[in-house]
Image 1 (cartoon, rainbow, N blue to C red):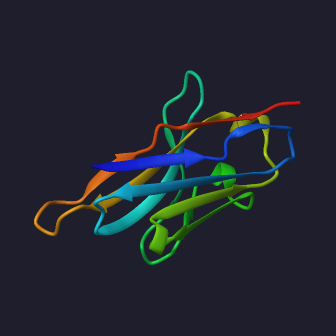
Image 2 (image 1 turned 90 degrees about the vertical axis):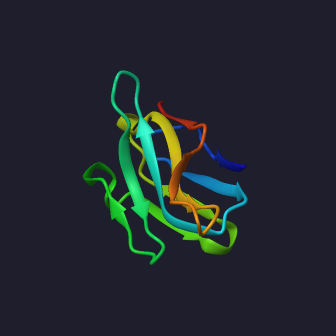
Length: 121
């Protein structure tokens, strides 16, 4: 069984910062790409940032220069440092990880339950 748990969401004023954390635990033998998605009310879920196992990074245009994704492979963890937050960043943020639990089975994606980020004065 694999669990993915996010933390770090909350209410912050415009211009403020938050750091989201996500840890995948359980019978994981390999973690490949990890990513953060978000979904605002009435909108589709969108990719915010991703980081493959080689450490390269990819960002949505809306967050470039403000958000930083990083990972700790030893902990199967991924982080999202969010600076200069704007009201339009308000959404539920989801952690996504591509994992393998056995070498004889294909990779699969797992998702966290989501953490609310609200940017408001």
